[in-house]
Length: 324
View 1: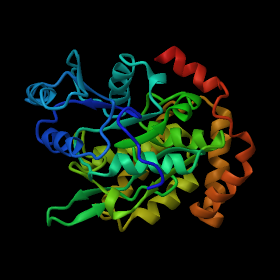
View 2: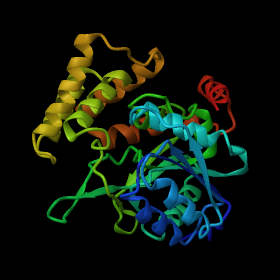
View 3: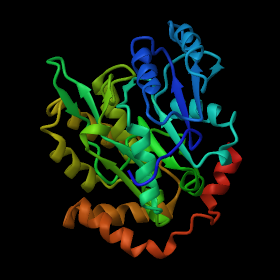
View 4: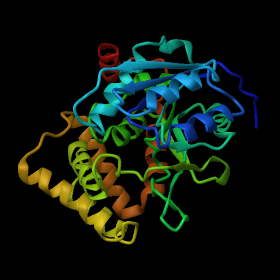
């Protein structure tokens, strides 16, 4: 490691709702971190199970843990609801006191040097705006299966951010594809987004991505709508579907995402109202289909290096100021 980070560099915000099955694993893995956070805000988003009791017990063990309680909502809302809860936590802190910020779920098992590694890699590359390890989920056989997030994205369940980047991109959009829009916005402004599949920063996602609402089918359809909302083209969505057909759940998961996209289009559901972003996204997707994601991302990072200005205020950062 190039520099030894210390406590106080980062704040963690965790939206949580009815996580009694997984919360203890996440809390214990945070306790084992070689570099603990200065503050960890867990937003209990109206849990009706033992989650509040578990959090109270752990507050006595973790001096940096703070719990924010929200009123119970009628239904679990993945996407907008999660980000609403995240912002409820963000509103309780002075963000500028922290160099780094992490949005972390309460259904993860995190390796001990995870945050130490994220901080070190951020400091090695000043343009690195958001990063993460890779997420794996346990199959019924016990085998760990990759969630398949590309190297050019940080994983939504454990997004680690440089505060300056988070501010510039305007934080998270309150819709399903918030965890894709943010990385593309970062690249638009000259930042880099990354995730790495190094064994010592692999995180176990105790609940498979896309299954936390009602079912895998519903979750993957929701992903398809998110791609539609973000502005993805039908051509790129279809190519992505074909590529993902062999990924668990085999065929079904990829087709559910594709149908979620097509159904959203047929119903005329709303899309992100940002023509500049949509143009950037479509250009990235066309180039990725021709040259592959890795080469495309490398080219875009070179082309937009001149835009990198961490202290600059953008129209998106102004939106964050209004939302926070």
